[in-house]
Length: 195
Figure 1 (cartoon, helix red, strand yellow):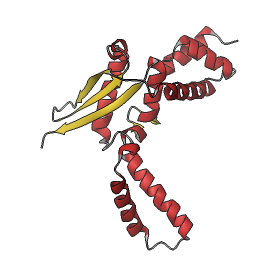
Figure 2 (figure 1 turned 45 degrees about the vertical axis):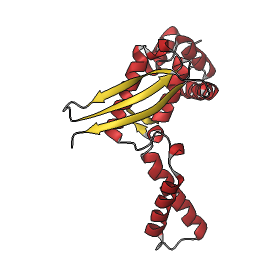
Figure 3 (figure 1 turned 90 degrees about the vertical axis):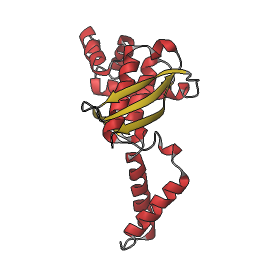
Figure 4 (figure 1 turned 30 degrees about the vertical axis):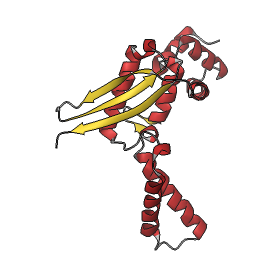
């Protein structure tokens, strides 16, 4: 039997609905860590179902650093004005803008990176690692790993979230899609700094 206190504790730590928390706790036999994993998996399924839906509403989120010399504007889209006007959506947009200022991503997603840029980085890494005496198949894996790591570090969705390094921005976005019940996209951003 799952107690109301257990459900509330899980809800407080995840922000999910009472029903989602209760269901996940029942599925995990009362284990909160397992319940969180179940909710994350369910969130991914929900996000996959919603990813093709139109996102014509949204807002421009902003973050200005306390010294007033650097700031970020980010456009985040959703399906309805109702969600866009909500405090949690506004907080999400602010958090993403703050993350962008702190982590300086160059792209939103690895998928949008020009293939020529990837090939140039790959050539650079091949040059850096050419003196390593390792079999060709191992070297190929090392090179691919370094290329992936480099572009994951400069792509917003694959960066660890500054406020919770245990999750990536992509995972946070998936959680928000599941929570809001509609598609959400980070469309573009601009970072400004005094020179």
